[in-house]
Amino acid sequence: MPVRILVGIAGLASLAAYCEGRYFAPEDPVLHFDVLDHFTGRIAEAPPGRPLVLPGPDGVLGTEDDFPIPLLRGDVDLVVRAGTSELVGPIPTGPSSVQALAANNGLGSEVDFVVRAVPGWQTSPFDQPVEWSPSLEGNPVLVLAFADFDGDGRIGPSARDAIALDDEAEAAELVPVGMQMVSLENARASGRLRLLAGGPSARPFRIALTAIAFTGGTEPGFLGGVVPTGPALMTAMPFIPPNDRREIVDAGPAGPEPATPDRPLGLEIRHAFDPAPSDPVWGGELDLALDGTETSIDVVEVVSGPATHFGVAVSARNADYLQLDRRPVRLGLDDIGSSHPYEIAGRIHVADDGGDSEVALQIVPLDPLGSITDLPAPASVTLSTSGNVAIRWPDLDGDPFRETIVVSSAAGTPVVLDDRGGPHDDRLTDRLVLTSSGGGSQVDLVSPDPDVDDSGTVDAADAQAIALRTGLSVGDLVFEDRHDVDGNGRIERADELAAQARIGSTVSVP
Image 1: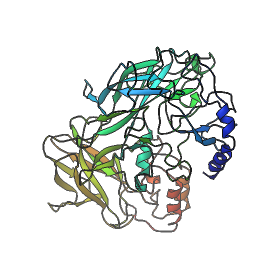
Image 2: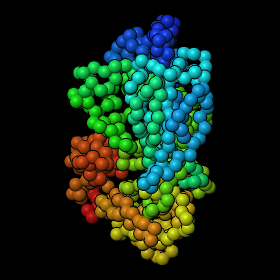
Image 3: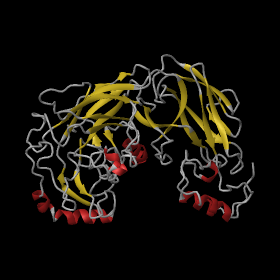
Image 4: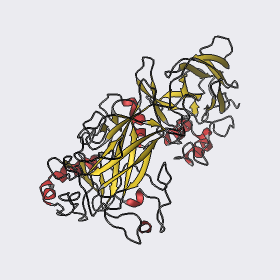
């Protein structure tokens, strides 16, 4: 945004002053010599190697008065390593890919981890990890796993792959696929993290393990007196998280709810500062590399579990994909065996346009958690609809509403769907049903049109009905497919404009 860019440039003039504002505490080697935020007098939070972004006078990160300082960067205070629960002596400076192991209950994979604090102000912080820190002792550290959904070797939106159509799929990479909280003792913590996603053996899911530790003491009146109020220390991250603990911890006066083995309840880690890849100043500053150059994190490779059923995958590398909780992305293979991001679809938009457009999809084998996986042998899958949507390709039996195909591998088998008849004459919904001896599934097919009340004519009432529901997404209690004219899963201004553009048009009532 222009405001942020201008503020960032203005902030360069104060860089010298910030260099002098350092926290002096030799007795605490983790926080010693960290940069101070002169708006608050507290230690500033920044992932290692990332630009310092101060929250500005309002004290809230992610607002227009943020104060970025591009030339001042965070140091390494925290390191996470995978595949071990103990780390003694000097820490290896480069991560190496570790293979996650299948969980005993068959659901997902597991990997051991260890987190160590290091003196980031020293020239070689990895050589002498911290053995004790008064600001960390007994405090929680949150270990987070972020997945490379599109296989470009980076976590988060990036312009480095020169593929603009996968920005939404890359935005999905900012949502953790695994999370675990443990306590620090002697500036270290260890545990086991469950990972709930994987990839086919030819292209295993690559996942970055990161960590955030909370320093300082607690206050009785703040989040139940169980959440530390000091600055957060972190490994490299694909974004800068909120500085206000109340935006991370969902808790009232009694504090957060108890944790579960797989995910701490009441925690949401999201980005407060994550600029667009095209931003001339900040683009490419925060995406997280998995090539070994990010020394504070580790990389885990995860292979999907055994195939249990078949599902529908739609390329997430297209302009129609929108990153939503109900539109999960997983790593799959394209027709030449390269990594490709796919939405594992539970709902597909088939435009009611009389054949002007088609929908291309893949029928793929899935594991119990919905990740694309390998097949032990080719399998037959029968597809069927109830007649609102036709199976255009393949059509080997002359029946447009039923087809049997063979799926041979994780790459899946392509299928093309289309609406039948003319434009705006179909029912709102249909269903694509997959049946197989290896397990089936079903997917909702939606074909909304601008005549949302099915009166036969598009009028102002249709546009108003959409406007009143703007902002609702699939999964919301009062969301209805009829108001989502473009079928992307979110009711937006574009849906209202589509109805306004056709006011006065006659539409066939199914």
